[in-house]
Length: 497
Image (cartoon, rainbow, N blue to C red; front, side):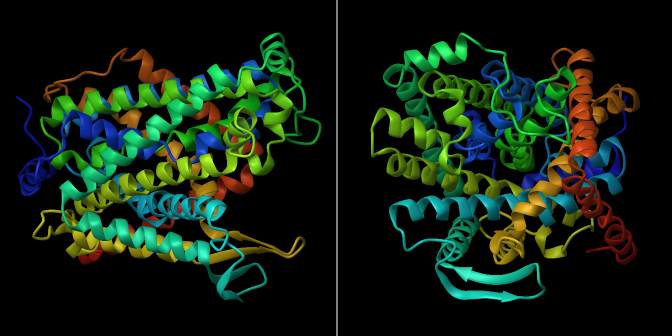
């Protein structure tokens, strides 16, 4: 009989402190709600410019879906085997070492979770600004204060609304799991309905015979492509491979956070069954909706229109085509609902990972405590404060005189790092099959070892393309990850972070 590790025995006891209030529907709503933000309404424009053909655009989304579902199938085995708060942090810790778990948790807190919360909160504010123009990133309460020639701090009305949203959802989640669950279920159901309505509008009302003929009559020929590197475009076979790899940054980011439900394993009913099932159901639902959304774009709009959509807002262009003059307002309202629910799911889940780290002495001690409502309130507050701080810094382009957002740069940097952690976690499935062959596995990964191996191969292929052709946005991500090593050593030496 396999003897459980000390960490396994310790965590098994700790998870009894939580309230198990998430059933299958609730857990699936966390998966779906955390995945669907604003990306599906926007990123197809840039992907179309990179790839240059309708068929390969659709195939790029299918590849993203297959990768995501494949990873979910592998994570399902790990989650059923170790259904404890902390999710991917626990998987990496048990499969490899506490260092690997910490480096993931470090990156999650510093950039992945908090940076995404900041980005989606400000996206909520931006689209609110479509309905209420006083909300804008250039409507300043505190004008940019330059720290250096390339960086500044500011507080615009859009930033303020983003901060308020983060604070409000952090507070509501400290009130107990029931509050976060209700918000998640309502807003995820609403935004899923909105996305279905968008698909219906494109397929049923926006059907454009000319666009259908141009797009589906010539699925594979590239047009309107941009240069990927000097002399390299999607016109050549290798250029197409590179284009699809680079385009995956947009589609994978739009499909990210599907594993967040694993962070909340201590609050899931019948977790050995519910966790794998909710991840597979959620990723399949979102993949289907994303592919259908892109089909809707292509039957209503010529590819050239998708490539040149104003501010890349393809969904807004589609609705404007179907209902002239209403697109901006309708899609702004839909994306506000979508981003609100996405932020809530991210806020709810993230603090549970810091809880697990704190119980191992690798994060602030109080983040490992539950409040009277039996949620990790201190971790929620720390996460919220750091996300708010990421909203305030601005980047400045001296050449154009335009301001950007620091969190956008940080998210670019860690997309490759996050993909590396996903591949490493799936590799952990293979290692645990060898090191703990007798551990209980109520669910075994479908298609093992072929499907997990294909996921790792696909992830590594994308990473190769990104490191070779987008080094400015990949190597800094590794620096962020490696910066966690001295922090880990300090935490281990002191017994707590």
